[in-house]
Image 1 (cartoon, helix red, strand yellow):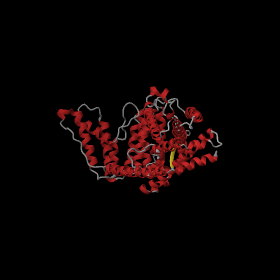
Image 2 (tube, rainbow, N blue to C red):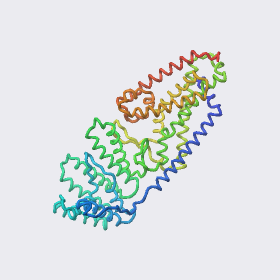
Image 3 (cartoon, rainbow, N blue to C red):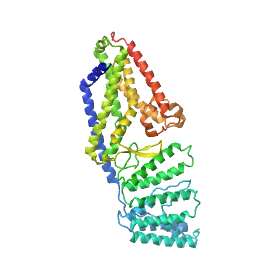
Image 4 (tube, rainbow, N blue to C red):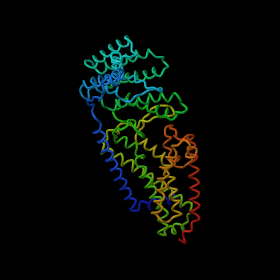
Length: 495
């Protein structure tokens, strides 16, 4: 058997086309990295600095009423305060935080991080809205808070501003029950400000501030989804993971995006480390094309040249010959995977710099809800092994088609079209809950075990690691049986 495998490997690597294919892989990887570099430059160029701005508002109280007048004057007052400070100052970034997306735990947004804006609103509502519900005590406290904020913004530092925010939030929290959505929202904001103080995260445009903002969003989503844990099970799992990763990045002062399989910071630039961790995701189609080319040729080419007749007259069982061809293809694919990983590591390092490789893979273990680190190559090895099952099935399928059809080009095109349809159309169908009971039995939804790494669960209801393993084995063994049966019964002498 070993000798048969060696002979098959020699045949594969004696083909000039095999080396041309490897050259194409290198060129494709280099091109992909350069395209990503250009996209990074475009993202960086499009990141606008904090510029002055002023809303176009209507301050005619006769047209909009006193309530509308108070609201629009508050907007102008806030923007004037914002524009008072220099571009890219900590003051502008601190005030800009109040202009961002609205968050909330319950049905209505709480927006307690907008305390400066709320203070201005309270003052103007009392002074200009004849139907205001703000009493004199609330107005006086708002005036007092506003003067405190202005003093800190003008003469203090960002830490004093954060401390003042915490003090005011704790005061507001006393107005609500500790189990209320408002109280939970305030706790989230206080924790974020405490993170700033504890880990010395100044207001500015950097990755750590992105982590703070993304942590805020994930914590609100997590609290909201916890209201219905059965319905939001997958979302809770995702946001729990994200919260843990954001906190890890903040606590360890990691000043770059630690994303791996998915973006933790949307729209952020990619580095060599991130691209390396996504090697099999980015170049999966290249591996598939290699698999299809190698395994489609391994029988079809010999049938066309008639050399398979010489092989079959040797003292080897047909089953042994077929298995040796399958194993030779698997070994070739493993070599291809290693080759792609190494080329991406080198090319990514040259184009983006090798410095990001100094940080290990940072992942999340769903079994114990803990963040862990792992050597980059160790993670790549584990992910590659988890994806190998998919390539093995494609190999057997290609060889099966090769026993039926002797036209190499037609065989490769047929298999590639089949793969594309299976990996796109079926994937889209699987998103519909009503089709889950059928979709979970498709081989394409069960052949990639990397989705179960570190205790992760499938997004298809009722699908588990054991379920996928059983479905995969049933499909693979059935296909292997059909392939062996076809190969044994095939009359190559009359072709």
